[in-house]
Image 1 (spheres, protein in one colour):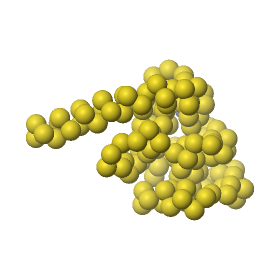
Image 2 (tube, helix red, strand yellow; image 1 turned 60 degrees about the horizontal axis):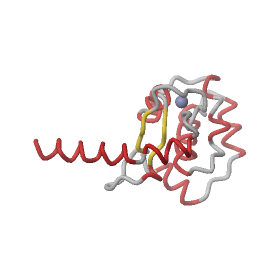
Image 3 (spheres, helix red, strand yellow; image 1 turned 180 degrees about the horizontal axis):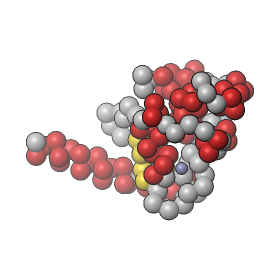
Image 4 (spheres, rainbow, N blue to C red; image 1 turned 45 degrees about the vertical axis):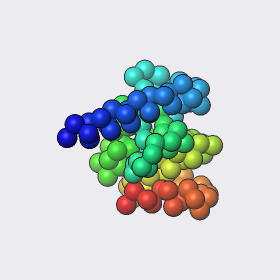
Length: 133
Ligand SMILES: [Zn+2]
């Protein structure tokens, strides 16, 4: 057990070391909703790779983190319209998360389905999106 805990703490420390670079990339706002500036946390895009890399991390607010961790339980609706912006992000990890959240509600939200229809995903991004299933 002790070993698992040490590994966990080492990982947390490693993620924290990405903080500065991530904050610069994100301009210190949540990278998904681009609204929240407070209480941002470093989140690994699930499934987390064996070795953490900063490319597989994003800076998210609490609400976005919850949704990203369990897209199936997302509270669907217009308040996620921010995704129509972030799905065009130049940051692959952000694009992946936005696409997952749009797909999670495309059955009931017309705007989400329409957004997805206009987005072209590189093959590598598409593969990353579906890796979670
Ligand atoms: Zn957010």
